[in-house]
Image (cartoon, rainbow, N blue to C red):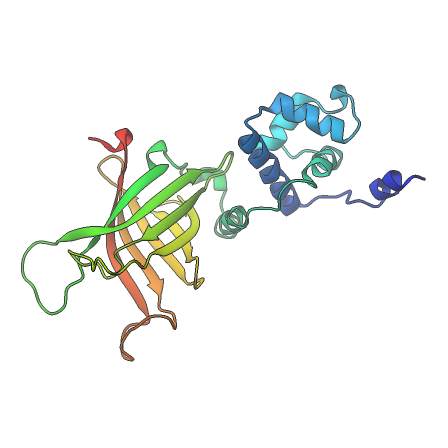
Length: 256
C-alpha cells in the first residue's frame, strides 16, 4: 500500500452536520474568492480525487452547496479532500451557524426571514446625543459609527463589521480623540427584529443590537455593550453602555 493509499484508508469516512457545514463554507468561500462557478469547482474536486466527472455529478455537487439535500458521505469525502488544503474556517461563519443552530433548534431555520437586499451594504450610524442632567426638547442625533454588512452565500446570516468613531456621542467630538472601536460579528433575522451580534476586536466584549427595518433602507433600534477594565468610568457607573441608534444605507440604494 502506497503512502497516499494509506492516508486515504485512514481518513474520515463519516460526516456530521457540523462537518458538512464547515466543508460547504470552505468551498463557497473558495468559489467567491476565485470567481469560479460550480462546473469549474466540479473539475477541481474531481482532479483532487483522481475521478472522472461522471463520478461527481454536477447536480449532486450543486445540491450539496445549496444544502437542499443530504449528500452521502462518499460525496462529502470527495469535497473534504479538496477543501483540506484551503484556508482555515472563518470564525464568523462558525459563530453565525452556531447561533442559528441554537436558536433555530425548535423551529425550521428556513422559516426565518431572509435578509433583504436593503440590509446588505454600508450604513452610516447615528446615535442619540448623550445628555447629562435634564433637558427639554426634541431628541438630537449625532454621527456615531460606520457599519458594513456582507452577504454570505447560501446562508441566512451576514457578516458584519462596525467602527465607532464617536463613542462619547457628542455633537462635536474632540478632534484630538482618534480612538476608534472596531467590532466584528453577524447579522441575523429571526422572527421579529433583526439581531446584530458583535464583539469588540480589542477586548472581546459583546456588543448587541436589536434593530428594525423602517422607512426603506434604514435600520433603527438599540445597541448595548458590557463595560471592560479599560473603560474610564466612575466606580458606581452602570456595568454596560446603551445607545439608541439609526443606521442609514450609504450610496444610491440608500437615497429616497
